[in-house]
Image (cartoon, rainbow, N blue to C red):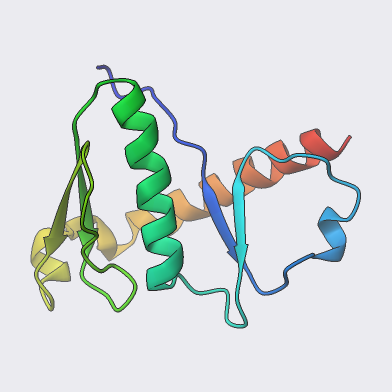
Length: 122
């Protein structure tokens, strides 16, 4: 494993059928909607089960590290994913990159994701 694998991203939006995706047959992502465009426990579990099925087919075991939140709940019955939830109130200790680098990473990631989406529409 060299770290180059990319999992299909998940995008949470506010609208079930956004106008900007009206004529799209397929996009390089999974899309979910709720009124605040937040990650929910239901979306989290659905996503983990999809990933678990994919990793099980590949006969792979992975560890997924996530912050504790109301959405990031434990999910029973995962065969290929070991879920590691970080303790609360330790972001500055456990995630030193939260001090500014992540914001730049997210901006770059969003730009590339939008470029992929536009390419899929054309």
